[in-house]
Image (tube, rainbow, N blue to C red; front, side, top):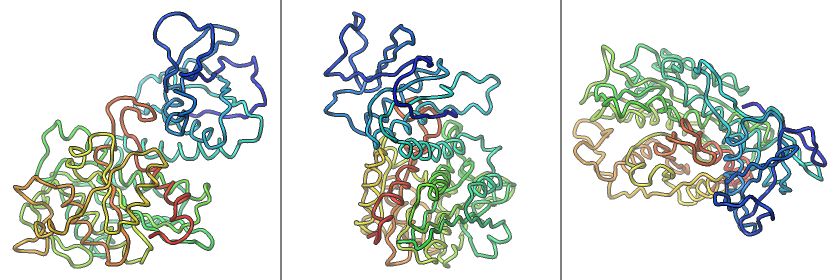
Length: 467
């Protein structure tokens, strides 16, 4: 949805509808009799008139916060698709106006590229009544929403359309310094995990490095995003029901790309390196076999116990590369384990890491951004389960389904250099959703983009030491 946002000093009759606030504890008089509208967050009531009025429920006035405004705006976007122009008269302060713009764009999103006919997607123009100039709030809300929608578009693309090479091209189009390694370069750089996983696909892998570097950066952060553009499970072939959403197994890379796309216009003061290992995990003539041993870039050898535990193999190479640049801290984002989804449900991402302070900063940024996360431990007592009889590590603890999200995190930790704070976001549960719910819409969610942007632009990472 491409909507023009304008600031106006007062409502105009030259509009298809006027949106007005309705608080649950102070409903306007004269509402139509009957049940159905109580001013709850996201409730919408259409009233006749010239122009028509649309009441937007915001909950109790004393409880109004970013979460309520974002959710209400998202619900509104789905309710006013019929109008081509709309005036919003909510008297929101700058922060909540930014969140409103963000939520409206997220809630109104639809992925329609492969539709034969395109349904109405929302107003072409929205006039916001504001007594002072809040243009910066509108602009930042649109920028943040666009970064999330970029990630959603990538996640929603079919696997045959978004190959590793195509993804790399998309990464190169966001305007940052971009370096793309092909299969020969990947081999020359000794990325054994990425090479091993890619063996099962006729489409060659890519490794993308993005660099954002402002003048006089206050910190240096590395981001790593898992980019399996389709995951059939390799030789450990998934059943069809488990394969239905596997075009989304590159959501971590999409999140990193989306976040990095807006660092410059938002004035981020942190240098950020993004590392995106991109491959398919398919079943071709020569996939990795169970029992094969791969050698990661740092020399660590890994025995393959499950070819469907491939994400940690490509992330291992990328984490080593990120660590070689000696950043102040690392965050990786990956659709890594079903265990995280089983533990936390479909609304929370798991966060774990090697530094309590850095994990705390990531979690705090997620809370401010409105993306629910929950910290999980990385207990050293479980580390021996990763030992292999024939190599340094196993990639999966066969026969033991307990604590597998933590074991995956412990595996990744092996490839983070000592002394570098690192946090791992497992977004397996939150990368896609089945139905519209607030700012989430069915399909790719872009979950994690807002957290990374908040961390890098407004968090402690953007103001100095990171841990």
